[in-house]
Image 1: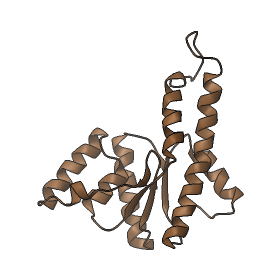
Image 2: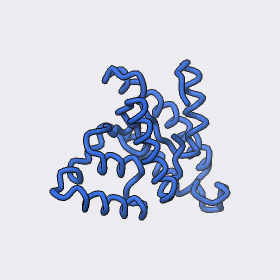
Image 3: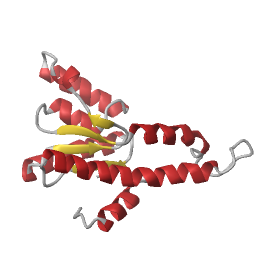
Image 4: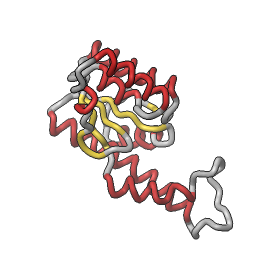
Length: 171
């Protein structure tokens, strides 16, 4: 699923899509960009009033404090497992490079270190492969035939290329 980070309507649509795919196909594993390993929602799902928890989670999703996937997992406990598809060290390295590539046009400035944009984009492309590799590893480890992988729009083409290169079916 191609994500538009913190965009309220997109996050609502992602949570709806996860629910639909889970209900219709039975997919239980949701792989996430921006996290590594298991993403525990128990601190939310263990609260005593599920209706209030859902309302707070919906407000957090609307404010960009929860993703659509996190909202779905909190508001539908036990239906899906959230798992981070990142390599934390590479993700943090990319975050450190981000300030130099975060301009609207992603152009170098006089204060940009040499090759800052090249480093930023190289790490972005490296993460594409990591997201696919870790998703496939988790599918194998959990002996599952399919998963949902949620990535931002920048990563979607690279992820699709890595999936095609590995002859992995995707929609």
